[in-house]
Image (tube, rainbow, N blue to C red; front, side, top):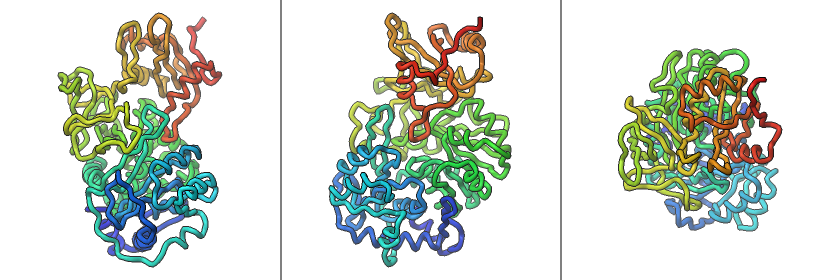
Length: 503
């Protein structure tokens, strides 16, 4: 069912039911639907800019949102899901200069921002773009009398998102409504969702995993909870009335403190591989929960899924699971499929992928080969049907003439008791071309690490240098920041403690 119909249905059947709550600011389904009709009328009244690269009806507008998890997001983000208008998701953590470049590249019809974002407001004014501050009376004043919501076209754009991938310059992509409609059908089944799946997403709503969780929850008629900024006490208050959590692994780890939460029965996580220590910790802290760990990409949607029960998993723990419903996988090299068990580039076929980037896609990993699409991730399909992720094209390390995928070593490190998380990087070496460097969280002695790796990996895949640190530097999406770690290695930063053999 299109989200516009789902929200209207819930508004008519249970108008007082709680739809969205952000740090105590709540909207019922009846109030949400009424605000969507008011916002739709206000947006339609704005002067129309031509957006040649987007598929938008004549009465639709492109509105930019840079407010993070401010309570007005409870109205603005569902508007992109349930009205003909499209949202341009600007990360509030971006520097001012980057916000300005994005507005200049794709000027929206209006920008919703915070009064403290003065550089963004000034940039919008220079481009003659109205800037509405949502933390003042301006937002409520902007909303006008409600009008009926029109039907939406599945082929129209509803979101312009950004992904940096392996570069620091964001790449823009447009996503059509039909791709998320197909995704919602698939994830409802895969994640065992019902109208009782009240969901807490502690991460930024500007990121796909949280925004998608909002769409899932509203379609079901359940309640979506978020918090304006991460605070453990606020998070536990939000979790108290929910049955499901959606979070990247770093935030899932942050939640696992205090009293175990036995009311949580479903957890969805993505963005990085769950290491064995965190999986064990989550199983203990959420004793009744199934943990759905999926692998995907902003450009591709869902790719594969591994569901972890109390004591077993639906696929080998060191894999990223089996193909997601409605998705076919193919491991290909030079346009041809490789044999099962051999390494190659992971391609997907289904209804969930984008068509391409609006800009910034040159030399990127995303490309299409007929009906198949890839972001350049490397992997292999195992004989049990599961998928093993090996790294990304361009991320392969060539050391002493051998091709090595860091992900394989990181998986082996994660299986060693005492290591809670690991990253492997390739650095230039005068004689080997590149050398493998492992950075770890955990207290396992170096001799034990080396002896355990020697059992699991051939000699040429063993890192030559090991470092320990206490916390990962993170990107804005909550993933370990490999670029920062490489800089720390070059600068001999004291946060990286070299491991030496015991004397």
